[in-house]
Image (cartoon, rainbow, N blue to C red):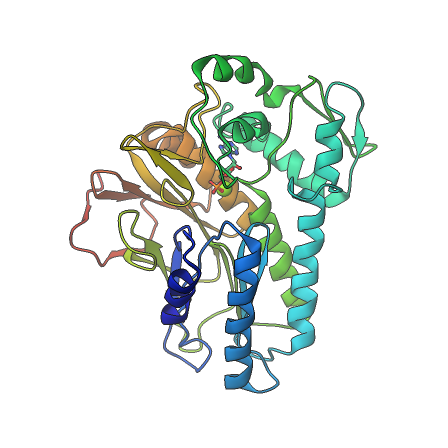
Length: 378
Ligand code: AMP
Ligand code: MG
């Protein structure tokens, strides 16, 4: 799998964003797969590569698919059913992921979220329950992080073009004009009618920091409904593991080395059934005059959050929560981010710093594998 992924990169000549996780286990044929996953910026090239991978998997496994990858939610989504991997079950899971994408993606013109954005400052919009639930949760994490996580970050994301093929550094004047539009308190939610109103004209929601987590939870739910007991859902690095390893040992999830090649890891997190999600400066960025501009913005400065962190990994049961928290904690930085996590139960974290030190929360089961990094827990 690793070799295949690398071939895509060289054959297509595209810059892939980096893989976030590597999972290995040694129990059966499917679990021996090593999963190298990447976010890609373009769907068309991905399609050809995807078909290639898909055929390879099919030819090696007959009718039952060991794993299926498709491009959705702006990233490579890979589902691995460790047993009973019938095509119909994969279809159901990917249908659910696409359903969520069609509602929540700002890149799909007819999506519910685009209707909400188009009606900013004008009228509330009744939305699908899925979208309402995610916006409600996003609002909660915006409040919890005192706005470091802010789903109304849309105008900043567009201004920088960070999720487009042509990102750029905006002028200070442009940033000054855009900042007043970023304010989660101006999102009005009506739980009775399930409608959303953005109070100011020009506001827009961007759920890029939370929607993949929700989709991963829903994909896992679809798998469970189909009777699947052991599986891995990986939506561009938002990982959900279902069930236990056959040998009853914990799963091991690799944490991407922020400075390394795709698939190289700084260490492993050992965990039972859980979700593992990382936010990092290496995922989506551009460089100009020797400075890196990445994709997680400080809603107060209008610039990419600039702190000592290279990445934050959150391990917890719910993937939407892990997704929201990894972005929130990254945007807050280590000190404030750890204080936020101390208030929560059942959430573990691994912080990788730019200076190659690593800290973890007390209960995180982390094993360092790259000796050029050091674990320096207080
Ligand atoms: P993630 O990779 O989950 O950390 O999410 C990053 C994505 O969330 C970006 O590509 C933006 O679309 C969006 N985003 C950027 N900054 C923020 C922020 N401070 N709060 C919420 N969403 C953000
Ligand atoms: Mg996130």
